[in-house]
Length: 338
Image (cartoon, rainbow, N blue to C red):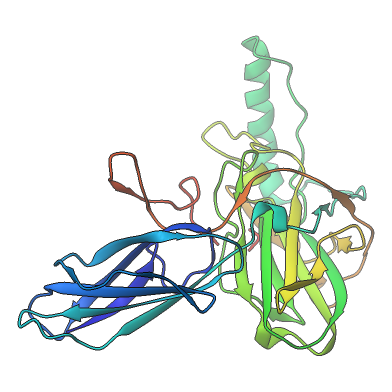
């Protein structure tokens, strides 16, 4: 009998997870019934826990806390079948992300230039009268003064060039809004709607990407597209805007062999002259293919500090009653600009 589909905190080979207690699980093949298991856990090559042979049919186990950032972890398990015969070892890997104190970059706001938004496209033609009607109703009900309509804005693009030597590279990134990222012209990862749905004025999640294969020896360029996302899109049946703030931002840190070589800061450049001319989670987007190709209109950015807590993906957790509960942000679907 052997174990398959090994998961760490309900995730398959997680990259950049939060440090903390581990919940290890697996499935069984090549046998009728599991009667025992044995687990060995290592962190950065050092053995930190050995369960010994445990008489149990359970296909999961709680393991001790693995603390620290950038920890490369590995655990392996072997099973005994109904004849008390041990099977081959099966192995799984995981890696922890950055701690809050490890972030060296600053939040970067790309919208520092006034732009003319005609607001005569299909999205705004629909959204404006609805907004004005609801604002008039709010004022009439004595719930506050009517707020002027704000046309949906284009997505922003931010870039930064940096020099680095080839090595094992990790990109840690999050955003107020939705992001997609490219390194040297290659899309990083396959997530959509990253960094996910969270109460964005209280905390966010960061993703970790292995970008070793995209890194060049010498000059590199990182490009980020940034859209409104849940942060300031139209939300709910009332069509509210700016639920978590009216300022978008991106925060990232690219490390090679554990050392930061590129972080988000005030030296970056931004533009709103890309093909996504309007974007909103509820009302869609306006895409103008005439803006495809080389981006123009680059300008400076505004960098600022924010102590907003940042976590990393984790699987379902256990409540005080021992019941497993799901965790997908605050109820959203993790994953590039709308």
